[in-house]
Length: 96
Image (tube, rainbow, N blue to C red; front, side, top):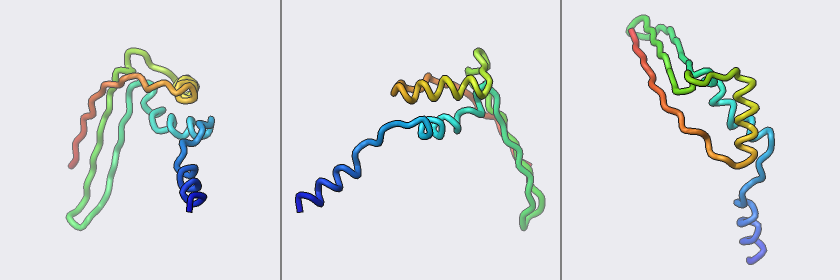
């Protein structure tokens, strides 16, 4: 019984950070590296056509980075265990 409990505890132990895991974590944020992002969608449903769009602006506009620069900085930060810098933004969107 004690061996089974030990196995459960070891299975829940924090996994060491790898470059691959850090890259996956950073990949989601990389699209906003320059401070601007957005989406556009068009579709047809039972009620007819539909369209939507959104524009996201963040404080990274003041210090834009290329996606490659952002990924290098982010992966180094995540590997070091440092928290993400605060990001403030606004998303404006609409649909037809």
